[in-house]
Length: 164
Image 1: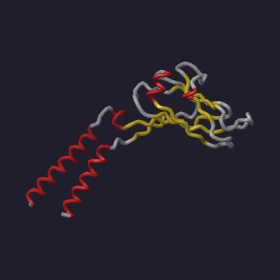
Image 2 (image 1 turned 60 degrees about the vertical axis):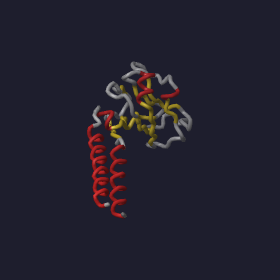
Image 3 (image 1 turned 90 degrees about the horizontal axis):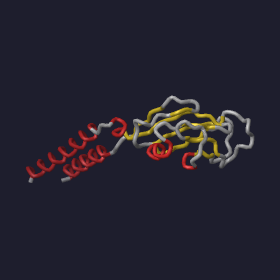
Image 4 (image 1 turned 90 degrees about the vertical axis):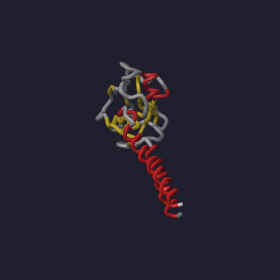
């Protein structure tokens, strides 16, 4: 009975792992302000890492707007939902990470929003984080794992009935 329970729990674990959608990150290679193309994404997250690269504006402090995402063809960050604000007074070279939802950004800013940072801040990287199945447009690997897990459970049930 213990062996059967161990096998059953192992099969359930495989099924649970098969239903997990793995995240995929794509670095866009940006190290400055610029346009990002979201036309091939329907869901996920935009992650921008920015850092304080100079100290021209010595009064930059916590709560300051330092940039964000702008509508296609614009450089002014108009929407509070896409404004990056500092959580603390930045030191030189201190990094901050800002994230926005891709679907919300596309709905408000279009398929090609601009990344624009200012007030002594500079873009270090822009990354798109998506579900692997969403970006690939194919759930075949996940489907295959689920089928294998279900077949394993069925085999366990058949073996258990033969033992009885």
